[in-house]
Length: 109
Image 1: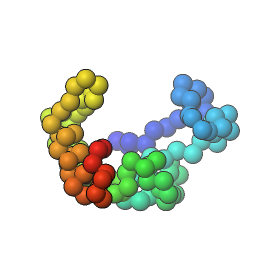
Image 2: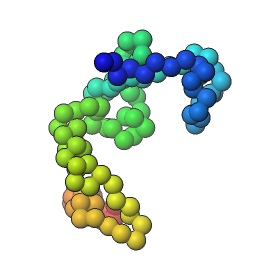
Image 3: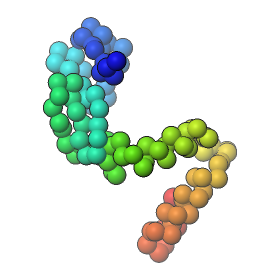
C-alpha cells in the first residue's frame, strides 16, 4: 500500500496554507510526501533540500532512527501535556539540561 496521498486541485479547498498564494498552489500543487535527513521527496520523486529545517523544528534532520525511536517511546508514555497551570517532569529535566549547555546567565528556557 502506498502512503502517497493522491489529490486533485478540487480536493485542496479545505486547507488554507498560510504565507502561500493558495490559488496558484492549487493550480499546480507541489507536494512533499516524505523526508529523510536534510531532504524532502516530492510526489514526482524529486529531492528537495530542506533549507529551513522544517521551519526550525527538525535541525537534526528528518526521520533519523534514534530520534524517531525516542519520539515513539515518549508518545507511548505521554504524548502531550499543556504548560498552562500544569507541568510534567520531562520538560523540567530538558530545561535544566539546556541551561547546563547554555552560556552563563542564560538560565531560563
